[in-house]
Length: 262
Length: 262
Picture 1 (cartoon, rainbow over the protein chains, first blue to last red):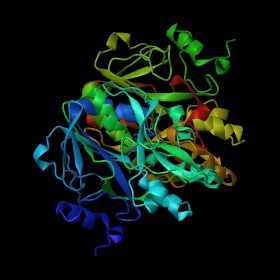
Picture 2: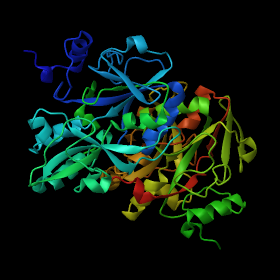
Picture 3: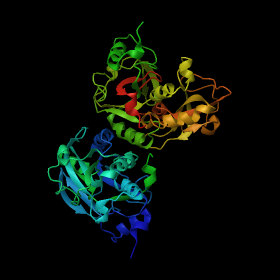
Picture 4: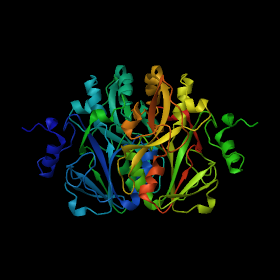
């Protein structure tokens, strides 16, 4: 059985491109950063970049493909149109389909952004002996809409999406310390404790990903999430926007430690 | 005599706007961050933002005015067209004039970027008892062209401009530690020691600012500099680009400590 955890990104891209891998990417190419994808026509790209500059916690840009480019500068050899296992296509703010290959949809005026992903700090947490429940349970992380407003830029406005991990009380200080060293992958938590304070009414029903139960000795800890642009697309309604499907990330050639400031 | 060091930014903007202040801004509004300015027509703005994302040491963006806006979002009440004591106008890559007010040149398609400035970490160094020679001598910092290539983006390419401060051998470790806490104002030094290794042939003749002599017990320490975009303009040749004049910065309403990660 193929061990995708030990595969280098270049070989993983080939596996995805050849249709051999079509699952969520958690655990793939251990040690390498994974990324959220946002593809927009050039006319919306400046607005999106200004939005990301103003909202670096949900939208930490780690690499940019200039107009028409298909290879990420920091991941030479990859093809952004076919090396992600699942894409989402939004038209006028509506999710119209999921695709495994977007070469047919490619336009010469597309600008592609790669945003840091919390899988990077999860590796650091695991190495420090912090247990991460959704990984133990082989589930996707739980993600929620909140009432936390992002700073606006151009057509982009709306509330932040967060990911949640239940953490034991004795570990929370360590979790804050470790994740704060990773500003390019969402950084320190934005909220710890009561979900209702950030507008989450039902913690058992996440809008994205899987529900994860919270034990009596655990507190829910929330981080800004790279799925935020997908929620914003509902308001901004660009004619087309292509993203990864939540959990199906782009595996970059960037080492996790290169995204640490610690 | 007016003490500009104790003046809050709002009052300083009024002094500049009224023509009462027309000198370099070093020492003004103590505790508030000063910024480099780059104004470009919208058609070049995405290229410049991608350039800045790829070259955060010379080009750390701390605030952006969207197309046509004249007030920086983080400095409410300021007018970017008249609150800097001296502007430089570049046309097709050529410095054509210096102005104290650019309202006559303003275009509705202008996008304005504010980049962090090393004055912020100089305050932190002074507070730690590190002497800064050009401040003691009431001179402008020495700035040089180098052979260090920036990463390209769109029309923007070229070498980095650096600032130089002579530092005593016993203080260099502390200087690296302190400035590395300020990634949004150029961060840690990019080179320490021999100027020739980064393409500086004559340390006594800086391309920008004033010459500062290096004592026998001192080593030249070099930081990436926000004047870099002015050098790039020579290559990129945008039809128009407006910047601050070196040393004549925009005084923001952002506190220095808000740019520290330490």
